[in-house]
Image (tube, rainbow, N blue to C red; front, side):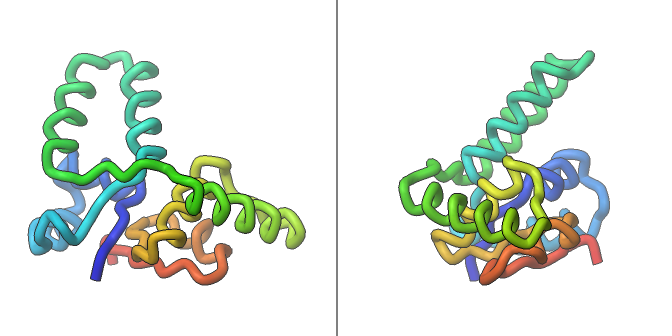
Length: 133
């Protein structure tokens, strides 16, 4: 199985807590997981917005040495558009970045690993796993 890690899961891995998330991550081969460039963008925002930006940058730079960062492409954009329209019709929207990550994962048929099941479970045909449980 191939996974796309959501931003919250990446943060847990970088902080090495909870241990269950770290255990699951360390049990995989590098080819089995990736992050979206959207997640990377969220990291960059976090660094720029952090009072401890130098330390935060070093942590992120170490982490990204071990993950494949996938570019956002036309298929991801198409899935994002479908997801956004579908959720808006239901009056059940989630944040723009979350919809972009969901669209990316769904477009390449990866299971999204997240602790934010409440949001992502609203997206049809998106496989999700929560490694914190």
